[in-house]
Length: 561
Image (cartoon, rainbow, N blue to C red; front, side, top):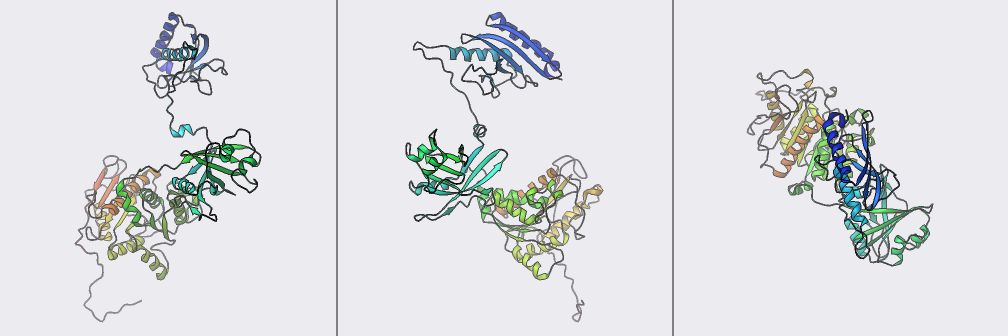
């Protein structure tokens, strides 16, 4: 149902309010049209404002009074005010950002009358009235009409300024997003006087290299380059000649820096000149200061599937710049429902796709990799390559779902005293758990895991759903079918695991988490009473040693193959 059927009293109010304006004498026509099937309501209104008869249409939105009506000339080509959108709608004091449900259509008419009367009145000098603009567009709104843009870093701008006024050759990569062409300045080509410079903050995998790049220079108002950038009538070749002695022969970008702003044009071979909006990089602090320590830490991500890929991307956004990634799998189309990677990585090893993604987020990321199955069939020599890399890490994040892979990771954690965290999502997506082992504080990972599964098997707990896979990742076959859970389920548990990992890297012994393992419910199921029901799990004490080696009194015993 449309608003005037849902709220007939509101329609009656609107009619009374507009009729009252007619009684005041400045509104001379009110003609209502209601169409419930089309969910439209509008009023043809004639009113006097600014010394003229205005023939307007007041159009009510389908969710009225949740959004304001709009007032437009009935003849769409008419321009009544400097405060008028390109498609005719008057921009009034009552509008999308100021509207309240207590206002009505009559208030819209009064606002329009005030605007037009003010602009239509002249002062004693004959100057027409001006209504100050109240436009408060966001940066993004202001760029809605610009689909050709240039990204310049502050460091690149400073480098250009340090090279005096001679133009520099600009390395540019081109990226297309939707219908927007984005030029990204990635560096400056060297010259006889200056060495080349590459902006290390920009990933080299972004976009495509722009042939011939562009030219950039510091300019002053009225100089030849400023004229080339601002003149209305000038050919592309003439504009280019102001920046380069090389004849204009490929589509190119020219940029001038003046008064802390950039003027840029794109020149096409067809003779078209496109204005390019300069976008400065926003380097405002958005992550907590305590995350600064993370950039010096190296994190191993064992398993680059749905959980591992999410943890890795979150950690790189939090500041981690050094990784060791382990996985043997290829990214399949079916993985896209949960993995952080997209179609760009389909067919590639998950490790390689994840490396590309991490370096697109932060180009300073350095990654060591081992594309193999930890715990699978491989030579001991190859296995040792992986374990040797593990011992160089500050933290091990285990998300493989492999029982044997967990055992290898736990062995390195225990023997080399490297903290380890891991997590699992329960089949069906009703929850999961996260756990950690800090050498000298908590028991070894295998003992912590044993404590967790003892908690799972607590006779006081109800039986888990058959599809839960509660024993997933115990020492068993590694080729089990994928557990059923959606991206939101995995994302929640992965986010908790990421916080667990970051807390360990930042604080060491002074953790914000008083417990070493948590079961986290995402809906009412099994032991969980409601969504986000979190249950701490008691684990083995650090004094307990994990040493499965059996004792033997037989000194002559032999080891048989």
